Amino acid sequence: MLKFYYHPTPNPLKIALFLAETDLPYELVPVDTAEGQQHTPEFRAINPNGKVPAIDDDGTIVFDSTAILLYLSDKTGKLGVTPEERGALLSWLMFIASGLGPFSGQSVHFHHSAPEDLPYAKNRYMRETERHYQVLNDHLKGREFIVGDSYSIADISAWGWAIRGERVLGGEGLERFPEVARWFKAINARPAVEKAQQIGKSETFKTPGDEPSFRALFPSNYVDA
Picture 1: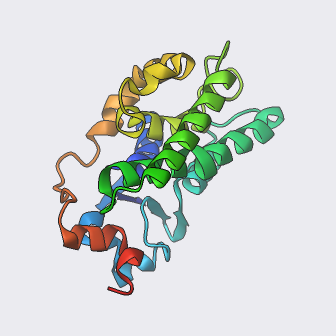
Picture 2 (picture 1 turned 180 degrees about the vertical axis):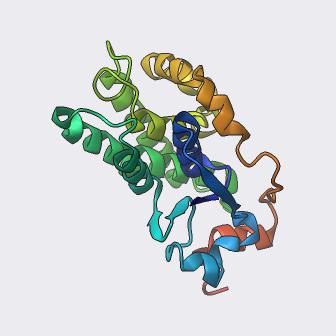
């Protein structure tokens, strides 16, 4: 059975939604990143980069949320696109994986977790996050979904970050980008979303905030400490 290494953060939530949409059987393997469980030898054998999500599909190991979405979609034949739309799917998945997601994460870090107030970093990452959301907003004008005429793993990938829109963007959150807000409300109304958000609810994960959790989450910050 497929093992799903999970923590309730944006990238693992994408895989949770795919599994909820497809009813693919899996075994949940909680990884408490604030406790540093992603750095154990056992987990590093699954993902040498020490991050979630990851899956072990009867010996086939895949890590990184984009890679996992592509792998599971190709394996199951679900939530993909037509061959003619494959290029667009890959493009938008990489836009999220290399742009919208990382800039959102860094903006959250410098606004909420950094030990120093760094106005340049806060401005840089917020402005780039907003720019990426504006690109997506413009693309969604007149569209129901990100790629083609059907719901796909591109929508799932973007949803994983959009669900944290208020924390990422502050203030009105996604409402500043009306086309994204419209799209998000439609995706969020899908029954599988509630099911995905219940995954792992019975598990207890440490809330970050003390020095040990920051050392676990941002180990490179403490290399010379």
